[in-house]
Length: 607
Ligand code: M6R
Image (tube, rainbow, N blue to C red):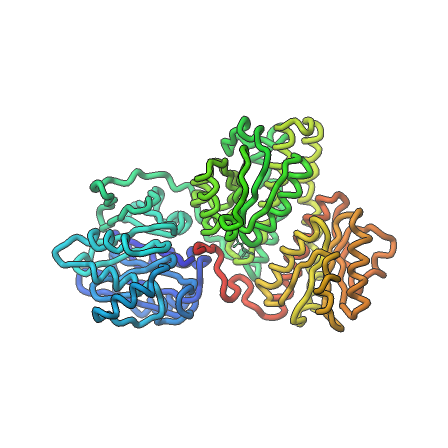
């Protein structure tokens, strides 16, 4: 993870770096740091915690302006979150910031220790810095040292460096981790994502692996092994808007509330004359017609959305689908048949394991489709095709609208595939499109019931552990419900297939253990209710989220939340909103840090 921003130009490096770091904070917020340099001196400022702490420290440099600088926001991998482990690191004549992991850092550290290097932090990044310093010779260009180090370093990295004697220049290299060069009216920029570039640079160049970029206040050069080239600029289409929370107490709540209007805005670009149409995504309809098997690969909530996608695709398009956790995909190892489509689902488009899975599938000749939110991200660029989920910037670490729009797009794509392969006719397809579009009204109703969910949250918020149970697709929703609760309210929530509980886990049920059951399918209702009752008989405090499938709904569990809507789709999406609000309310009542939960980062760019 970690976010990097660098600047050289006629503007104020302090301002650019701090503004850029604020945008990049979603990548980690354990500590932050910055480096500023001018003709006469340099400053390294580091703080534990958020970028706002760094801002306070940088204020102390009041009255001083710098044309060159870089900054870093950290998600700890090697070494606890602390000021010492925060970046930038300076060893000898080299200062750097790093995003990624150096796998062979211990071996390098031992070697460097023997020749006199000492280390102030526990990080792999400081070791890389020392390695660069050991290779940097006064009479040679910094590229020589960077390429020497590149041959030795194993792992993933994006580095920005400053070398003594090169006060006006910054250097950068990447492997595995993203890094973009930006050109603005007042200088050049380096950033981990295009959003952080967008307020400053309308043009960008994505560094290729092995290239070294050198920026000065007036020029940008790319050093390749075959000589120096000029960057070929692309237009940065991202328009970052600093909207703030718009009156909501948290970004998560703001993003939850955006969901009803997102249903149409996310899907309408892919609907023409009432039918799904993915021309905008440049999909090859011919290639898709031949698809015999689908792999959906993703992490966390995106993987949970993929499970919903599996259900929609199998139900509508009748194509066998398998869902893989991206970090396990390459090791399963997956069996590819001819005409396997590999769908990568990711909000950020920068999740390292999902990127590695995409490359693995592509290298083996498979067609890849990204279902991505962040424009211009690595997955969006490198997948053969890309469907954007159009959710807009998601800032809360816990995904809500990101997940919902992934589920919506997968639904529409399933209808598209079934129509494209003539499994359904246009009339059926139109009716399915209407069904999914109509969930906006339903979820608006659920949104208005936040108070009811707040009351339920009061009942479970102090439980040390809790179970979510459901069958079929409801189990997939349980997985998401449990993750949301764990992530932001730190309750040990486990999702279980309702029928599986009695094969061992039911022994954990004690007096008062909350068990929350999900029932959006009338067909599975009775069975799920029986399983819920089994826990109630053993002392569980039971809560049921369900469609109205019985006249005695209020007698089944200790609490019953009747979902909004009538169709299966409406109930599913009403449940999604409910589980998000329930987790939000629990976290709120417990006083947790909702938008920036402990130990997490929004974008997981390390494997
Ligand atoms: O950016 P991605 O969709 O690839 O991220 C995948 C997961 O890291 C993400 O969904 C994570 O599980 C969320 N924080 C859950 O709310």
